[in-house]
Length: 110
Image 1 (cartoon, one colour):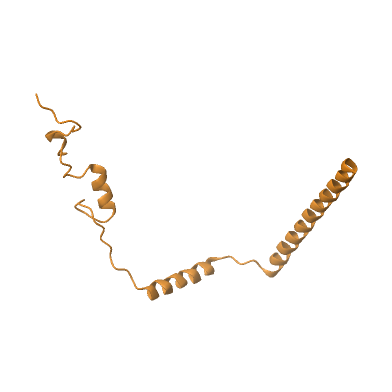
Image 2 (cartoon, one colour; image 1 turned 135 degrees about the vertical axis):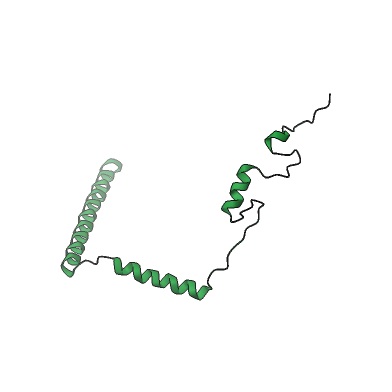
């Protein structure tokens, strides 16, 4: 009785012991990479040159900027005022806490 150690391949499974056939996962990965027969290798189509890609990129930027809803002048001033007031309140809060902790440290540590 002779057995091959480490080989579980059978003729029915479709995998040979030599590893010549690709597994299902390998074939799927090869198809995803652009190889229809599943034998590996990556085929890349030549795209447009760098100048065409750059021009396309800037055209897309301009198109997206046209979709933006810009605030009116009164909206902008009210948003700016809210932000400045909020920042001043937070600054006052941090200043008050800092001053309080300094006085507390002076009382505790002399």
